[in-house]
Amino acid sequence: MNFLELKSVTKRFGGVLALSNVDFDLAQGEVHSLVGGNGSGKSTMIKIISGVVSPDPGSRIVIEGHAYSHLNSVQSSRLGIQVIYQDLSLFPNLTVAENIGIGFHRGGVRPVDWGAIRRAARGALEKLDVELDLDAPVSELSIASRQLVAICRAIVADAKLLIMDEPTASLTRHEVDALLALTLSLKAKGMTVLFVSHRFDEVLEIADRVTVVRDGVKLGTYEAKGMTERQLVTLMAGKSFDYETSERAIDRSRPILSVAGLSREGQYEDVRFDLYPGEILGLTGLLGAGRTELALSLFGMNTPDRGSIAIDGRPVTLTSNADAIGQGVAYVPEDRLSQSLVLNQSIGGNIILPVLDQLTGPLGLIVGSRRAELVRTWIADLAIKAPKPDDAVKTLSGGNQQRVVIAKWLATKPRILILDSPTVGVDFQGKDGIYTIVKDLAAKGLAVILISDEIPEVLYHCDRILIMRKGRLISEFAAHRSSEAELKEAVYA
Image 1 (cartoon, rainbow, N blue to C red):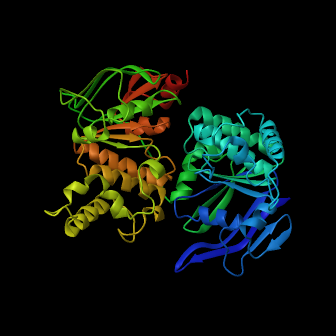
Image 2: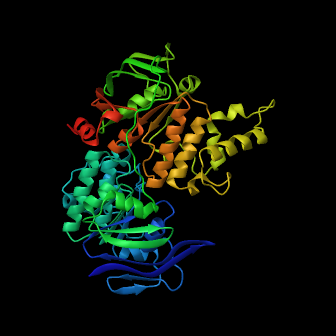
Image 3: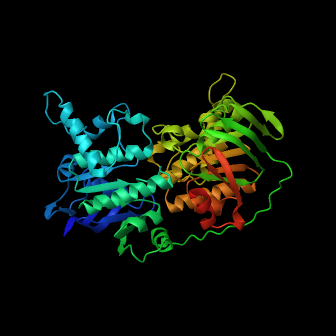
């Protein structure tokens, strides 16, 4: 029996056809994956199912045998449909119990029954067989624990269909494994799950069926068993992507960056490595390894307790990001939405943020022609797909948003670029574009540190790879002489 069916669903936004005559179904109690590139129509499908967007006339939505021309968000929730978006939509200042029970109280002006909310929250956690402090503020939780809170909130809302939109984008491999196991346990209890992800290994591990959409058209629904990642990529993108390791000629006579004995209590210890001009140095490891903390120290935002940093052979002290930028260091953080972009500001406005002082005239005002030229140059150089530079950056796809972040820091003319998980939440085509940009920059002499949880990412796109565990560098690999199996053994051992 199908829990949900979409029949001839079409949706236009102005002159743009977002979905074209899509038929789709979800069987009761299955895990069904929806894959496609940015702009493929995935988000529009989710919004129609959850009642955020109404389809065009002639479309039908069938839920447990009952047909609707459209839904609103209240109807969708009452029919048992809950969505966990990538940003989780939690209230960071509220407790775990309050977030889980946020929709539990429907009593108008009646006093809130806090006891009932806590019992509901505790019951949801017990169903998942996990433990969280009900009184802990959500702001203090890890991303993985926040995911659990969001799932518990869906359970309290009596979810029959749980839509998970890029649920693993910000999780480590260990946390991903735990979430996938939890998803399968929800399936075993009869819940239907729509799992949306760019990570095809997870899709094939967890899904019963996979539906592929491209340019608003459903290409087909396939049994996950027997499918390969390469087949999914080819279907989704319309072409294949084949990566291989290679050895590039890099001048190692003089490092541009040298780190010796760098330590910060409780974060990382005795870190030593050299980085050379034109090199792409990969840094990987499990959660808590200290990678981001180390990167922040190299960007002047996390002062080490001891050790030294040298750039071009000269010792430097980096006590602020201004110090680092002045030394030619740029940092693209992991969370572009909250740490890199001003989402309501324009694309051009985001690109010029670090270099405003370079665009001002004698009176201290920004010279419009300089601004326009700089923005135009970087949009062209990084092939940012945007109708107009004055469009809000939030209107772009994840891949193009990340290109804006990279453009913003390249505008500072760095010699060292630190990329912390640069392809999180970016589809395969977007990732490929970012890899091309990084390799082109390295070919021009820029030194790059690429931090990633994904073993294939560092293997196929870096020259050397450092493995970090519990704050220490434990091993080093030359990419062209290594394999995924070797790296995984070193990371997970």
